[in-house]
Image (tube, rainbow, N blue to C red):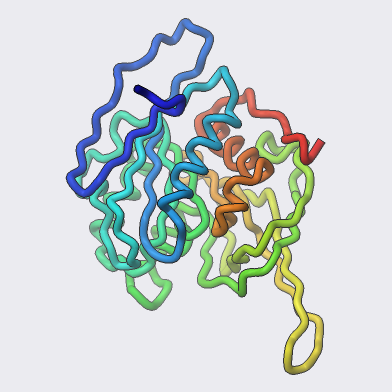
Length: 277
């Protein structure tokens, strides 16, 4: 039996097996997508299904996504995911979705093997949430420039889990056109240490709170979704997606699905969800 998203899960004994290419004349765009998750601090056991199934549903009937999920079950920061141990791990896929939290991987050769897929291999990518805080290479210091060139924004930390008020700042870009502002449940707002010249911001997020000691009103405001051009390859990233409720929100899934399809060069993007019409 095969689910509609045609999803397979990769465990420690990793073996990638792809289905034969689908016919191109059936009016449906067929996409082979790799979803990589794991590491610290998140409910990947559920989010890997929430996000992949949500993208498949949101993309509509004219897009069929053949998902391969790479999750070897490890939930610590220093782990080197099994999928990357094959130097050709990315071959055969049209796009890779990174949803990882491996912030203490320090092997720069290992990290270069990930970046090769998107630099030399020219495979487009989607980066979700803690991916931006992964692969800093030094273990404690944020010194590995190559990873930030890929993501597009250098981020070092986040604040407390609180609702984030979201405001679109580019209403003409295909990803954000027609989408409305909204406020998340309790989420983590990642800072922007630097926005690289190749990055194009789409969405900002703001958290506001009262300082417990002084009683003064405080706030933080950062870019939370953007596109990036990494050595000629399209990349969409968002730092949103810590909470399962956010991942399942149609407004989030529409944003991520549009970014996913945009990265592939697909121009027919899903309409705004009912919550934003």
